[in-house]
Length: 252
Image (cartoon, rainbow, N blue to C red; front, side, top):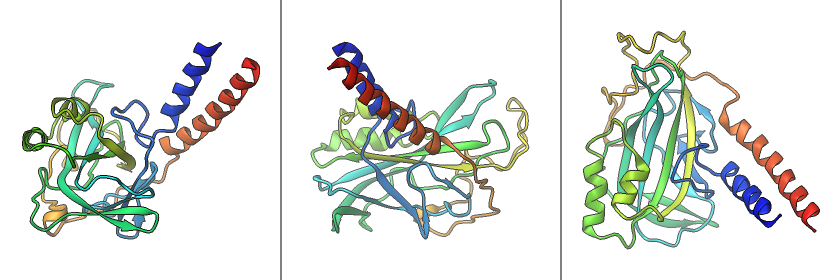
């Protein structure tokens, strides 16, 4: 009975994660991601135009560290193999500092700190999947050595196929993820054959977007409001919570 209870608690923990289902390293601590007047937190669907420039970051709880790094990864890059996707690093910024903001913390980038991977905005191609999940994780680098930070910046040079978990493990920072988030951006379609090329609207190349390093070309809005993973995770979390209560009741 105890084993079943622990298993249910583990499932509840995963369902309430702020990062997408199945993504690791997962975290339950929310990272607030804001693009101008558009809130990109909690799995919300945004437009390509709204996400053209790098967002501002904050947390609802005060952060203990003094220096942080953020990564933003597209988890749904189409490949030439039907049904399989790859990942792409859209942004890596180290040297983030913290300022207290009410009960939480606001993160800022000192002008002297260059991005390890300059931001470029989402631009999902007309290929399956049409909806892409863009995941952000905040890593506490307060105690990181120069060698550990170099592992991060070296990894940022290879955006395609970026695996956050492997990079953090190599840098020995896998236990330093303090907050996370994801939002989605969609292409209206119709979806072309994933095994064929010829699509200019491709999230796999930075193109002309400069994000936080300069002006951007937001282009045409391609966002499409959908009931995505955020709703599903909320429902899953509620059901899991009920299951936990039931498990405790029957265990007594």
